[in-house]
Amino acid sequence: MNTAVVIMSKTPVPGYTKTRLISVLSPQECVAFHRACLNDIVKNINVLGLPVFLYYAPAPLEDKSLVDWQDNSWWELSEELLSNVSMYPQLGKDLGERMYQASLELLSNREAVVFLGSDLPDIPTSVLIQAMEKLDSNDVVIGPAEDGGYYLLGIKQAYSGLFENISWGSSEVLVETLDRIKRNGLSFALLKIQRDIDTWEDMQDYYLRGQEYVETQNLDSYQVVKEVIERFNMLSAEDKG
Image (tube, rainbow, N blue to C red; front, top):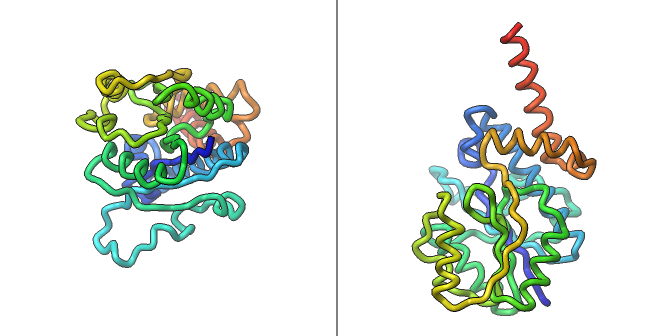
């Protein structure tokens, strides 16, 4: 199946990205983590030989006319990865409208689109393979996230009803999306639940689960997290001492 993989991402700008981590990380560390996550995700997609489309939400800077968001100095993707990435601005008032617009564009000459966020850097390639396999016999494939959202959405047609009136950013996203799927009479398949990284607790969990897997320890994002966690633990020990 001719499939495009879309990463929906904010632009990596201090104070704009990974804001739920700013209570522990500096804005610059949030940017470093965001960039590392993107590198890891693109690497995983490249293993499968699939084209990557990075749809970005520009930061609300005062003078946007002077900003070239497609300049790699913002993203710091390796040259090898950058060669397989096409960048486009997100269009629409909310995340749902932006995903719908992206699906309209890409499904005009492809059989399927798989949407990912930038919050699950250790997404296994096996999950991506399973998503594409399940799309062969289903209209929609969803990867549920522990927080009530989803980390993956695969579709073969652009369904506007799938994205309308969703409480984006809430714990109801998955439930509401499944309701839209059923209302539209679409068939669907669910993938394994995963925990993406939005909060400090999520980051600590990522650090712990990485202790069990060498593959995770080799990820760029894990190196950023390891440095932050170990510094935090050292400071906590000093405070107690």
